[in-house]
Every structure is written in structure tokens, then in C-alpha cells.
Length: 259
Image: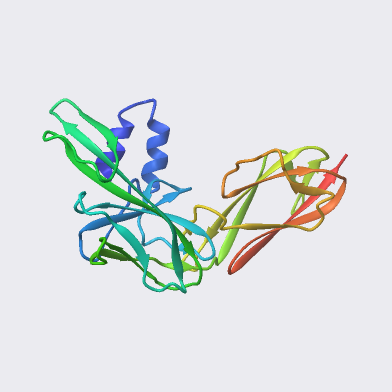
């Protein structure tokens, strides 16, 4: 970790990126029970990977990557306890790498292809996993015959706390956010487990309920937004609220739309 941070910090251009990434545990991974594979979460807050000791938010989709093992053995994923989670999609990607003292070069290949003699083949598996109920399901990676390659434990947990930050276009007037009619507002949410750790989710972890959509409503002009950010627009004057919730916790944010 320390060497990675120093390497980034050596460039003045990347200094701010270095401080953020290193404080967020740059490139954390979790070894499988058999030591054959390494696993990590990707998504918001996990730009360089997060270890699977982090909680996966119940009722959301998380993305898990596995790497290592024999690149010529096609891997397949399964969840032992299907009541707790399920694999909804899996994608294998492979590359051939040539390494010299001065540099290394990689090229993408299909999983079933082979590399040249001077190249090294490596593959990884990216998984979309739907978390259904709280618990500790086992994620297993097996070969085509169903023989176990490695396994790791997921920690699916409900939300214990939701923190909300209101951005762009709203002013905090002491518990009520004032917005001018026609203005756009961003609502950024973060969710934490009972131990105070930020829970991981890639998609649909949070829900937003509008008390009066004639006053404040989702911004339909934003077609592709961030998972943890709700884009809203004021459509009429008056007072209203938005309830931000996930399994286990909720937060109500109050707004006043003025002319």
C-alpha cells in the first residue's frame, strides 16, 4: 500500500488522486479460502477494488471480480445459499502480456484463445450478484465439471444509517432545503452498516420516494446517472420531502420550493 501511494505521489499532477485513492485502501483484494483466486468489489468508492470484508448492501446489485488460477480452465460462478444472493451475470476476460525490462504490453483475447510462446495469458471473471437477504453466502468458482476452484464469503447486510448530502441548487435553511422553482438539485447518498462501515453496492441499492411530484420530481433529462446520486428538478412552489431508503434504514429530506 505505502509503495503504491508513494508512486502516485511522485507526480505532482496525480498528487490529489494519490491522497484520495490511498485513503480508500487502494486495490484491496480478498484471498479465496483455497488461496487459488483473489476477489474484490468494484463500483462507487471501489475504483481500485475493495476487499470482500466490506458489507454488501442487502437488496442491491454488487459487482465482484475474481482473478488468478489456471487461465486455461474456464471458470463458472455459483452461490451456495440462493436465498441470500444469486449470480445474475458473469463475464470472463483474458489477455496476453509480453514483459521486458523496459515495459510490458498486453492485448485482449477471447477466453478460449492461446497466447504466443513469449506471452503470458491471464484471465479474470466479473460477476453481477443480486443480494437478497442478510447473511453470509458462499461464492464458489468452479470449472466446467463443477469441481471447486476456490470460494469466498460475502457479507450481505441491511443498512443501519443513510447519510444524505444535498448538492447544486439548494440552500440549507436550517433543516429545510430551499430551492428556486425550475432549478435542478442533486441528492447524494451513502449507506453504512451496523459497524459504521460504508456498504458496497453497484446498482439499485437506494430508493427515493417523492411526497409531492408536482413540487419536486426526478429529473427526466438525466438518462444515465450515478447509482448513489438522485437528480431532481423543482416543478412547482410549496413544501415537500423526499424519503431516501434502503432495507434497514431511511432518511427524510425536506424541501421548500420558492418562486
